[in-house]
Length: 106
Image 1: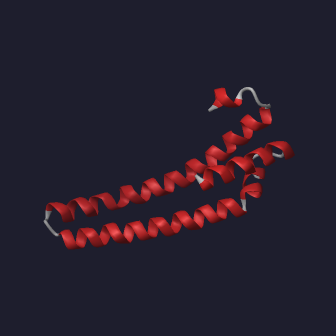
Image 2 (image 1 turned 60 degrees about the vertical axis):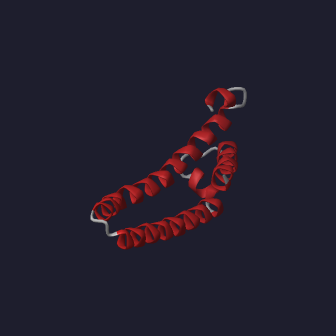
């Protein structure tokens, strides 16, 4: 990504870096939720308690989906203040806001 961005200004490279740091935080939350439920799924699967295992999968999916949608909405609405908290350069904040919106939508 940095090679593609190298032809642009330093502010664009910095903006995408900040947007990716914020994105990594959201990804880490989702990963930790999955890692937290894996032992419960594994224990119930090995005990052949498939009904309880599916309940754990469905509940985790619903909570993860809710957190993802809320997080996406928050990052879309508050992209400018979040990026602005990292750096005080108007052009960099604008690039970061745009990249944050692109990342959230994808």
